[in-house]
Length: 339
Picture 1: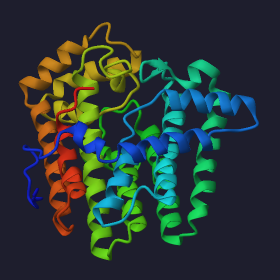
Picture 2: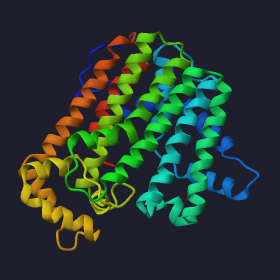
Picture 3: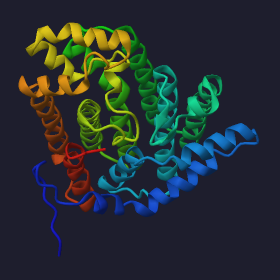
């Protein structure tokens, strides 16, 4: 008989990533079907782009978190309402990606042309809006004010995060506090919403709901910290998008914030890259070497690890189960991400 532990260390995941996703593989296939169903439209361009977005794939991390959270509190994530709401969370995430790519003038997404580069900015803006509205229309079927409260709050926070980020573009004096404020709004609150809504659908106690909300917030923070580290350090093309683009777009991420703290002389080079939108005069490798020399990369990774550990610790409030163990294992996978 298998036993389930409460305090698995983040460094020693009990379950492999494949095993975690296999626990909800049947439900995730239902999410794919629901995504296709919700994206259908008698407007041909919407149907075509909806199919294009669905085929673009992605890891479906957010729906998986919703489903696992439902199971972790003793609910049944194979029920239609759980599958429907897991799909809603993917719709919201996809809408933010579509709008972000327009703002960032991104050419690719997941190794395919982005919606804006493939269909144009005007179509992409409207498609993002359609995805948002479709997500809310579907969520109304749940007839749950707590769920709607969470969805409206997280959508507002994501929009605020994008607006805040725009005010900070091109600035080399962004503080750590400002960086984390944007990060939480753009990424972490959606992770938290996925887990909290999953808990509500599973009939969670108030304590379980709070624990899963905290778990998602810490997990989403760790996820984005690693994403920003990978943008800074990865080889070109390894991410499914261009590497090193954050600085080119004028975004100061945590490794660069720490680099500028430890090596103020780098500021002029950082400003030059943001101004020119090119690493021509200041190669990216130079920033990476200097960041490693002054400990900026190690410091940023340590912050990610601390949030991952906090995420795992949040789950101590849950009853032992394979699904709780699966959630407890996910922070480790995030820290080990290479793409």
